[in-house]
Length: 138
Image: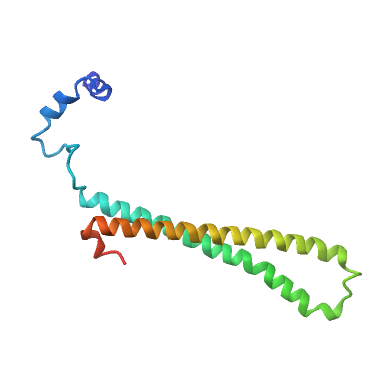
């Protein structure tokens, strides 16, 4: 049996194999235009799972972006209690760290938004190709 599969895989007896399995229902024929509904639903579930992951990355990016803004607003509010010249050795590393966090947060948000748009396009394409799935996906 394994030698026969190897021959089929190598393309030596593909036509014979197709002729033998032509009438069998358990073998998916290569020229069938319609995919089974389960495959379409699984594809939609996969796309929606990837979209959920991108939404989680978006949420994380917003949180990372908000942290430096909170710290800088706290520094501005309490600025009357200290002289910037005396604490510059504390403020400079803090500002550099905040810039790094703003950059990381911006990257995460931009990346997540582009991925979400891509997944929305994939879902729209899937809905237009398969009307049975369109009624279940908003």
